[in-house]
Length: 109
Length: 117
Image 1 (cartoon, each protein chain N blue to C red):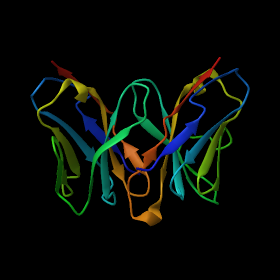
Image 2: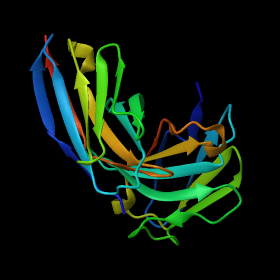
Image 3: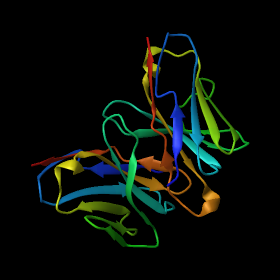
Image 4: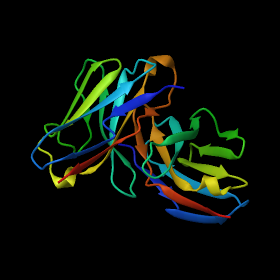
């Protein structure tokens, strides 16, 4: 089955800096790679996703890159703001998904 | 966007009793629903995948007789925690997806916090 690893587990940046979170996956059949933001006690919110036929996708301050050969994908947040502070999860799969362990991002004002 | 509701949002029950959690897709037909469990400060662990009208597929290590899943309609799936024990206390989240729509995104419910005393 799919196994997703996520790093780092915690990340602290200064407001305005960039943040990068990396994930690797094991199942070459996985073809959908979403990223979720979860605030305490709330549901995960999809922030961006990428499918296996695309190498990069950008939405304003958020971008995701995918390297299928190396089986890794990354989330890039530029110009971070305090409201970006949350736990971020990557996931990989197709019909069903497996989640990474999460990264707690703290953006210091 | 697609909306998924979950009920109840919080439930406290006594050890040995059963609890039912409902997951509803409000504005789309969810042919596939997923149930996750999340412990504090941990990730979402997939418990089972259910397809409307068929038996759920459980992940390894999840007791199917303890966590009963029913997906009787295209808009409703239920998770029943039978003979609950304190170690079953957790945050349970469902998600729903319509594979026939061509949309890959899973839409998450708000979660149910179960506390077993």
